[in-house]
Image (cartoon, rainbow, N blue to C red):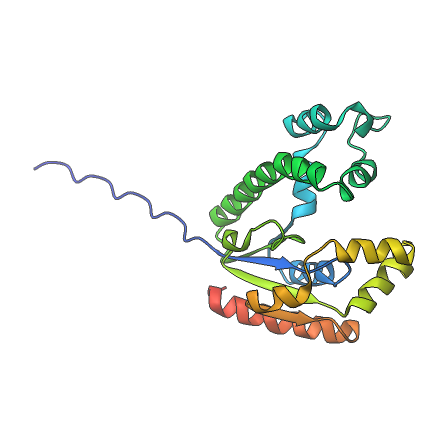
Length: 215
């Protein structure tokens, strides 16, 4: 009697991938920390961007080739404020930088999701500030938008981050209007009240996502 072939292992079921987004100073990072504290794996696009241009990386080499050695600080690391200033008001330079960073960030995020899948997580969250601007709507299963009134966001940039009002308005105006993002999101968390209210709304959305994911 011929031997029975071994049954191949069942691949892990992919988790529900959530994209957490919001314009600058909307409160999305507060929601991300709240969810991470509740045990949900959360990765930040900003952290992945730093990893993509870590010292000795091909990403850093590509940035220096495109923008020059002046973008390095005295320790040989990327001077992020200087690079940000160089590309902020120059659409062509910003597009060139995004062409370097976005594919690398996408690969890092994919590897992170794969690792969380192997660990058996049913729900994972990627904090992606420019999700809509970068055209990443199809990269996630569900989109959660954190939104706050424009004047409140401007106040936070001035009072909490030390920007002057004109600079704060310039940063806000550089992003897609949240009003255009709301109908394209599966969940919207309004951050127009107290911290306790924001946390309660974040908890409610997380409960819905966990139920959907079977987590």
